[in-house]
Length: 228
Image (cartoon, rainbow, N blue to C red; front, side):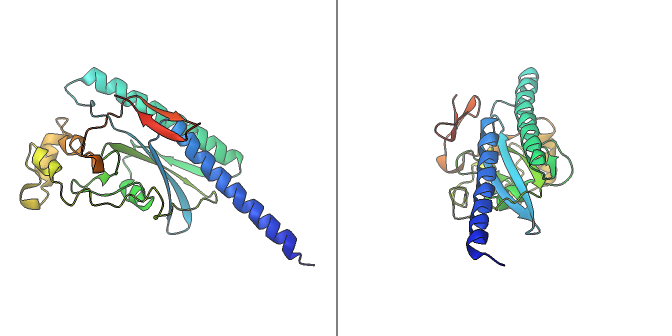
């Protein structure tokens, strides 16, 4: 016999568990150093968790020891976040495959945009309202019942921050954006020498520099704050 009341109760309970799992994943990611967390689906079926970690404005090759240490720290935070999330998902009976920010196969940026983390900027990078282009992305592919980010929520970062801003164009020492057309050769010649001016000059809607060094997550306030 079909009991509609029991079935409805079970459905609500299952929905609550899904939301709890997704909320826990978000909190765990922020606790381990992610600045923004978004969710999307590949081919509208496979859930993907997209994490955005800080790319510091101090990471320049003029300071090789410092950049190595800072990059190592961020990769360690990323590795810890991936490890805890993977363990959690597998314990719950779900599969999980990690794609780190160092992965050379595929481009995570379209996933970051689909997950509501930002929009395409004039510099060809993802622009976030708060952090500009100073973000590194990683992704976890899973079969857990996760919902894609609501594009009308606070993570919907579609904005006009790029429309009236040409700071990345003006700051490029290689003039790679001359006449509004991107010249990859000019960009490459500078980037192999450590140039990241188009990243460092992008501040999102704040239009002012925000240091991403020393970011901490507060469970009580459920937010991540960064101090200079």
